[in-house]
Image (cartoon, rainbow, N blue to C red; front, side):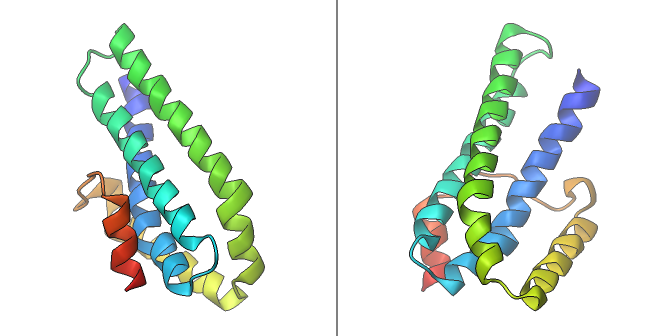
Length: 137
C-alpha cells in the first residue's frame, strides 16, 4: 500500500502547489466575478487535502487511522476536482486564448521539470485570504 499511496500523495501535493503558483495567480490577476471566491475555495481544498495526507503519515500503513486519513484525502480531492471541472475551468477555457493556454501549459511543464518528485517544494497550508490578497493587490 505504501508503494501506491506515497507516490499518489506526493502527486496531489505537487499538483496543488503547481496550481497555486501558476493557475490561481493568473485567475486572480485576470479578475472576474468569481475569481476570488473560487481561489479561496481552492486554497481551502488544497489545505484539506494536504492535512489528510499529513494525517495519513502519522499512522501505520493499513491501520484504521491511516485508512481514515487516506479516504479523507480522497473525498476532499474528489470534491475539489468536481468544483474545478464544473466551475473554474469551464470559465477559464471560455475566456483564455490559445496562446495563454499554451503559455500556462509551458509553465506547468517547466514547474514539474524543475521540481522532479517535488524536489525543493515545501508542502504547507496557506492562509486563503492572505493568498488571494497577495495576487489581487
